[in-house]
Image 1 (cartoon, rainbow over the protein chains, first blue to last red):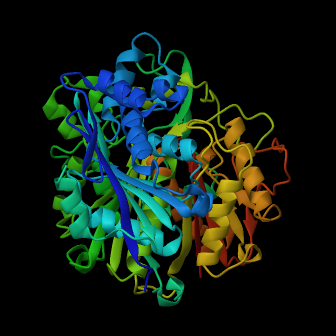
Image 2 (tube, rainbow over the protein chains, first blue to last red):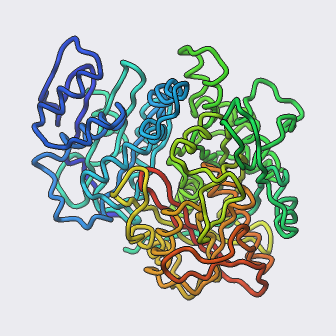
Length: 203
Length: 381
């Protein structure tokens, strides 16, 4: 019924390593998350000063998307509304919720409050890339390949021709991002629950 | 092949609204028709300095006869679903039924009163609440949880609609809830986005939002139960790709979602009898919505905002306002917009100020939120 969908790229940022399509691109041993995300940003050699204003969840998702799309994604072949973003995690925005609540004692900060929603990372990815398609943030206790596969298939069968999907989670020093680029009528790994699970676990 | 040709009908066979106005949909609709509002001025310096207006449950409100270990958030979810599924035990226990939960902040208020620990963080997590609610009712399938800012409720209904249309499930119980505490109030306060008096959506003197707490449920099914069950006909989601805390300058992205939802419903803009807007009464949201409604060519269609009755109920808003709109459509009434007197948006808009009566066919619900997200949902006969 629907067009063939393929995973045309994947990227993980986990355990102080950045891996794309199974190849390690960058690592930085024994640094905390705050230093690590900045090190990855500098390694990418892009100019995006807004990066420094983001919370760690947004930084992580933003960086993973930069790596995911670099050199292999032809933005011009899609209308802005044809690109969707579907993400999930376990801790929602708790990492930023804790930081915001701490700030309330000295006067609530709007710059922190805005990051107390998990879907803000989707907003940051959309702003960076001009993506205007469907976007949803789900909460699951673990990466749920079946759920992601089904929800991405729904949005791609209805509206989107490309979708960035996967897992972005941060709580304190624990973090993990694994993102997939799914496209229609392009060569790649068949988009299936099994392949999502296999690639997620290979990281 | 056009996937729409394969679509199954999706009926709303039961629903509930649990708000300070009432604990059932019937109580809520009656209250609204009588002009009741849940929004009152509060003074609680533990939460915010000075006074603020919000729609809050009384601290002594009892949601469940047996509270158990459920938090207020979970009690809201359970109480709302309990009322909605009163005559639907076969659907609750079916393997073909999915529970979908929508919330922006869930149990976040526990962070304000409990000692912080890894155990507390897990207790707060939305998946913990979803598991407790699913076990309470005996739902077979793992619930889907959506946390997508203020469009969460509308997205949850769209998600349920699609999973029924595609045949993955036969029934979806979609419930949304949010609780208002210091966390959320101080945050919106820090944006200078709170109005101290009743909010005034689309009005020239609008000064910001009222927050509100509540829950609502819709039971979706591919089989109608009652002769007057309405259908969910189409929906779409978009992103502004503009700013994380300010809406689109043009409204084009919400307009795109409206047009996509119309296409999916196989309708045109002239088939829509009324619009239930997001209408938060902030300067920028209402202006953006007016732009979007004009781009979609719907500026003469009556539009209302229900925020003056319920406040902005965050992850419950899309559900509460859709349930009200479904019943408005059935009863042939378009509710007024409390707080609205004189238009304060730069594009023409037919903001409904008085109760209208007449035959209605289809309705549109819109929502927009932080992160630049927009959603549109079409329902009808």
